[in-house]
Image (cartoon, rainbow over all chains, first blue to last red; front, side, top):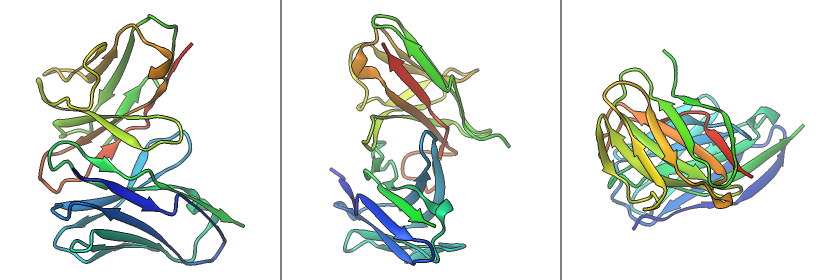
Length: 111
Length: 116
């Protein structure tokens, strides 16, 4: 059964720093991996979807990489800003209708 | 194109009452998923529906919980005889197609249920 783990659970950095969030999954037979952002008291906003055939996907200051064989994905945030403060979740899609989410990394970017 | 709409945003119920949570998927989306998020925890899958069909309800408690997605109208998650442990945020997501397809999930802002 697919298990998704995110490290670290929480991260606090000064503004302007580049940072990496990690996601690992136990079953490499995935179709894609999706990164979301969740602000306190809000729903999830899709950031990037990276297909299983892709190695990386970029959107603005965000870059997601995927290594299926090792069961890992990273989300790279360049030049972090206070507005980036949120919880970041990675998720593996519903292969068997049971989409698995990591518990998230809670990011705080200090001005 | 409106996103996934959930209502109400906040719902307060006393123990033993019924809670009805509504979800209107994005236009053109026929696949709906419900998730529950407890405080400081990740999202847990509850149920996956297509129009008029429950595809997978393996994550939903067998008692008191039910879900539907009728031909017309929103998807409804119904919790009967609520207990304090049902207090959580309930999120709905929709996609164009489900299962093994590569269409991304789009989430609503959730309904926060508080049971007093």
